[in-house]
Image (cartoon, rainbow, N blue to C red):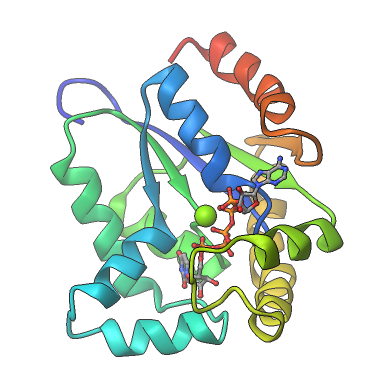
Amino acid sequence: SKGKTAFITFVLGGPGSGKGTQCAKIVETFGFTHLSAGDILRREISSNSENGAMILDMIKEGKVVPSEVTVKLIQKEIESIDNYKFLIDGFPRSEENRIAFERNIGMEPNIVLFFDCPEDEMVKRVLSRNEGRVDDNVDTIKKRLNVFAALNLPVIKHYTETGKVHKINAVGSADEIFEQIRPIFTELMV
Ligand code: UP5
Ligand code: MG
């Protein structure tokens, strides 16, 4: 991140909308560093950090982990990685998250990708994923969808109003979806 001004992309969309899948493709093609907020929090749980038990409880309930915890972890990653292009996947999840990031890190995203996916498709994808995630069950998926609608959609609305959102139709094959994303970064030449 030293030398060149940071280029921050927030990658937003409901549970199972394909954020992680598309981030992997963007990394391959455009050389971004992928920071999945969910993965970073799950790593905190596995490393038995002081906040691990609290984070696990929140994830099981589909709730948003307090901003001070998540923002600190993301900041540590940004500062330790020698790249200037970041995909921040699954964050900010609430207006409170967004304001805490902008205030504490002192940066705003350059662009925001929003994966627009129908709920029944998201449910189908999450329930057929078989990676042992504690939140991939019928009960928690309902809660995640509710929290997405109540807390994350307002963030997307905010960035739509500031002209930063690129809305992606998240239905179709992963390759088809990537072809909607490719021109966005090609035209920016970042
Ligand atoms: N799949 C992907 N693309 C497909 C396609 N085009 N067609 C068919 N299938 C497709 O994809 C999900 C599944 O669908 C996979 O099996 C994939 O192969 C398939 P994926 O790319 O993993 O979707 P993604 O949007 O990344 O789904 P994920 O479940 O990771 O999204 P969530 O936003 O729910 O999860 P996240 O890890 O970001 O957060 C988990 C929890 O952590 C949150 O609920 C919250 O409790 C907590 N959290 C915070 O509190 N704060 C944060 O800042 C971040 C997380
Ligand atoms: Mg993900």
